[in-house]
Image (tube, rainbow, N blue to C red):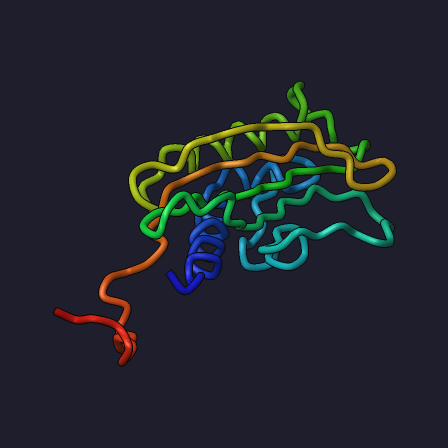
Length: 166
């Protein structure tokens, strides 16, 4: 692995999030307006950890990041996908009742938990924890784990001349 998965996993995750009509709807203030998913990228949905600096209007945000949790051997490693969901306190309550961040986490889990597009086997939900990035914002951070190859064989690198080959 040459860490291409960082790029591939984030692109796949962004696609999974932005093709869910329910997630897109929950990102709107009134939970009725379905905005163009493309307009949400880098405004409310980010492929990196983002925290708004100046808040002039409360919004709901989803951010994602990929890390390597551990390298268990030369063959396998454990990538972790983090998804932060947070909203302004004025948007926390859904019009039909309930908590917006809880519902978003539920919809995100439905969209990607168990997916076979991340690593080998299935992507597994590992944890959901409280997250409060700045004043007046509350949310959750979700962590998903997978198993992937550490190295692809053959590596294409030449065998050093001082190494025995026979």
